[in-house]
Amino acid sequence: ALAGAAPFQHNMDDDVIEDMCKNIIQDLSDYGLCVLDNFLGHEEGKTVFAEVLNIKDTGALRDGQLVSTKGKAKEDLKTIRSDKICWVHGKEPECLHIGHLIGRVDTLITRANKMANNGKLGQYNINGRTKAMVACYPGSGAHYVKHVDNPNRDGRCITAIYYLNLNWNVHTCGGLLRIFPEGWREDRVADIEPIFDRLLFFWSDRRNPHEVQPAFDTRYAITLWYFDAAEREEAVRRYDKERLMEKSSSSST
Ligand SMILES: Cn1c(O)c(C(=O)NCC(=O)O)c(=O)c2ccccc21
Ligand SMILES: [Mn+2]
Image (cartoon, rainbow, N blue to C red):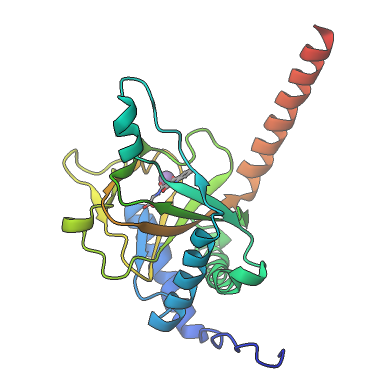
């Protein structure tokens, strides 16, 4: 190892991984979502949090969703600033601990996909993912309207969110993630508190509409979206065709 490079946490031992994977497979098939707490452990969680704070301090975070301006007076737009995001590979020198987190989640998802019946997790064949989206909600009532991550088969099948918020209390800080799982009774929702070192998985498609309720303290999370090979390939093909059509129609005009 490079002199002075902190040797990252030894690999999780196998039966710990196996256990977590069984938990993920069981919960995703029963509820469409799965929560793993104390995922990295306190010390490692804090190294990831420190890198996210550094990203924020360097000003790399950009406005996420557009705050709808219609019907809102100018001044209250400022108060409800929206989420801010940036995309991280995990190989950047200032993001090595985020990279380590990504590797750990990759290990789980890959292993769970192998372990699930006939090598598919919820009938998926997971072969890739997006980069990591680092998100920050400034504590000014910023929220995220109810939405589905992947409503139109863009290839994303599992959303993985890692929360970084130390001593988060939803009663005073808000920022609750409320999922409205399809098929649950009308009055049944899944309320997930964005607490430190918590890892959440859920199906990315229309089965899991969800919203982030207004946050009154700074709220950080890192999201990865995992791809199903077939759905992604089909989505890319569709996208390329659309671009081709656009080009041919624009060139013919
Ligand atoms: C900032 N932010 C999000 O927070 C969620 C989201 O669903 N978050 C759930 C959560 O943080 O608990 C998103 O799904 C999302 C999608 C595109 C761009 C930004 C986005
Ligand atoms: Mn979402």
